Amino acid sequence: MMATKIKILHLVSGDLWGGAEAQAATLLSQLKRVEDMEVTAIVLNRGRLATELAAMGVRIDILEESKIGPFRLLYKVWRTLRKNKIDILHSHRYKENIIGSIAAKLSGIPVILRTVHGLNEHFAGLKRSKMVFYESLEYVISLFLVDRLIAVSLDIGRLLTRRYNSRKIEVIHNSIDLSRIKALKNPTVTRQELSIKEDAIVIGSAGRLVKVKGLDLLLQASALIKKSIPNLKVLIAGEGPEKQSLQSLAGSIGLDNDIIFAGHRDDVYDLIQAMNVFVLPSYSEGIPLAMLEAMALGIPVVATEVGGIPEVITDGINGYLIRSRKPELVAAKCLLLLNNIDLRNRLTHNAKEKIKNAFSVDVQVSKISRLYRCLIADSR
Image (cartoon, rainbow, N blue to C red; front, side, top):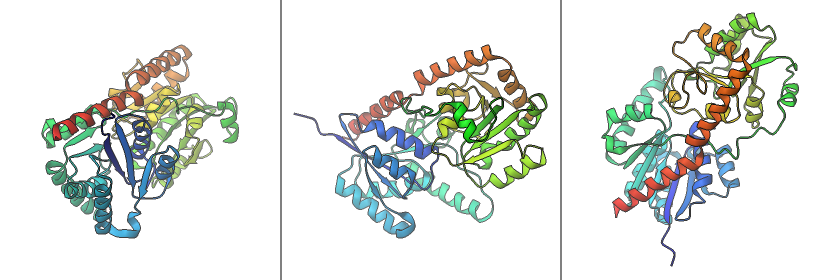
């Protein structure tokens, strides 16, 4: 006779397509295949995440937060948890953690988890005051209601350990599904579609255009690289509030004819594959998925030594780390890679091996499944 399955519900906002949403989609697509688990999700907004989960065959409820307000949302989450007799609630951002943890406790859910995907963005003025309130509320809820906080990097784990009992913290790295990380077009075709000449050298990045990604450093370094490589092109995939300021900076440093803001793209793997070097100049990070994807695609990476990035990249072995936010340092590492094909091949080979052995979704699912089983056993 088959044992009763563990019922797990993931609560995700889905109001944008960022690292948390991409990670939730990757994780749920594989967790649904684990024999002793039944995985469902509540998504708080219609959008790409809801569409992707439905296409993967994950059973989802969409509760549109903008239409029902926080108190009715809390009631609907509570009712869904009760109706489906959920064993584990797993949330992915601070808002879902607040709503979900309260609803789960009221529903008598035995296990509550929250994945901390990264540090909260910094705001000014009224937004900052609101974030201070939400962060304080989430701290209290996490302290008293949440059974386990999953950090996606050792760096985040250390920060959380200073605030909570270390026994509450579990480090399980972000991962990618290697079977899905594939470019569908030849890089030459992608470049042609972007009006990039065949002999051009392309460096770039992918992700949300927000201050924390530090893309101004990429542009400043590109202006220096262009002095040695006149046929340089800069390719940036993604949307965000910093787009206008980045466009202005590009114009002021002479890159306005050499930079392509590709916007939001569903073919981002094709764009990354069309790059000669991928640059991630962030101010802070957890384990950035775009970096893992670039490494899996065989594109050499230059990244700032922040957050969880050094847990993935070993400087000079499978990529390059920048320890100071100086454009000339970024430019020097990019030029080193662009001028040495043997070096590029060695670093990209090592990078692919690192991703396969430590950051594939199979590794992550094994660790999270084990954690789920242990927490359920302890709750009985």
